[in-house]
Length: 133
View (cartoon, rainbow, N blue to C red):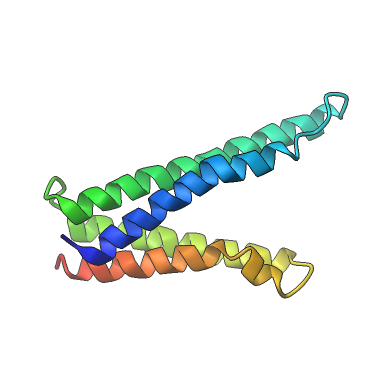
């Protein structure tokens, strides 16, 4: 068993449940009124759909990481780990950059700190991938 990759997989699955269920509950509270402009209602639906796209990413990458950590089903473990590590690293950079450029206060860098999660998962997967070398 590859412990760092297993931990990354568990983190992704926990994040999936929080994102898909708790986050969506909070997001539904922002639903525009039925008499709002069409563009506002369409934007809300589009952003909610994108929200759940991230949920699917978290679910599938979590499952993939658990498979990588516990089985030999995938032969190219090191390569898959490298790709996932790069994916989470770039996602973290984009998130951090977007928050930094959009923030109203310095505390938002940490309140909206999903970039930290991305960097932790990236590092765990990269380190775990080295064990597969």
